[in-house]
Image (cartoon, rainbow, N blue to C red; front, top):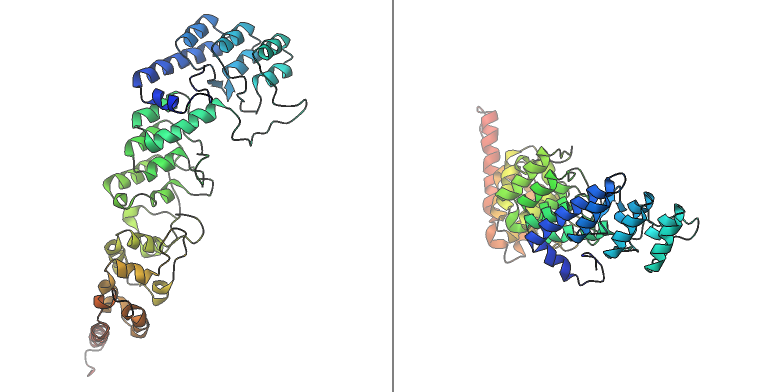
Length: 389
């Protein structure tokens, strides 16, 4: 049976991934088989030796074509016989949606047709029918090994990720089991796994690739676990993808955020995504948000945005005011520096604060009002020192 046969228990795949010696042996055998298949004519001696050493007979050789398809294209019956002897799958499709018997019929290779039919092969395409490339469940070695790479990125070790790449997995393949479909790099970045990110980038992962819904790699990094946001490894991955060529006119490095960027929506689920400001406050970064806002007096926070309720699926569907309140940061919101010249706007939020027993102790509106008025008087005296105020 093939090492990757779908009829075998799924655990057999993990068994290979968890045995570095076995994986190294099969990787070496696969490389020997690929070299033999690419020779002209096919190097039968090395092909048989590679198969004996457990090379995968379903391995894609070139341009998405499995070994059997290459043997048929080269009209090499002995190579085809060797692959079938080692249980090559006759139902695997190539990059054009054809099984081996389809290729044999198309090439009018009667001997190959007879041999394949003796091994129970069936055609997938009717005469003149166009292949259906949208069938993601059609048997295909590339999909199987890509799926395993996704699993190793999510649950395996960096060494296992490299093993799957060496076994032919495509680092830019989209995960068909996630919604939206994420590339490998997005998964590794979201997990804040620096070693896996480095391996994927070193093997050609595209830092500009987007998910099936248009999310780029830095979008998904905001979905990291709370304890990883702004951690050393989280910031290191931002630097790694930028060094690899990632760029976005609308993206800022996390250490260079400004008030306008805080007001943009962060992609976490699609419809109703919250602003980055609220997302950070909800995830324990309220002081950082307030520090950024405090540096930009020209873009102060408003009563309207504090009162707006988020609608993102899976979020708390709270207002920004409530997020700051739960974080215990309202005392930093209701200050003279924030509300100078807007005292009525500040007081419009008083009912929402004072009706909540958790929020009310955080703010003394009378003191805040007096502070705003005192600051206003101080500014007027500075502008017109001769006036009696």
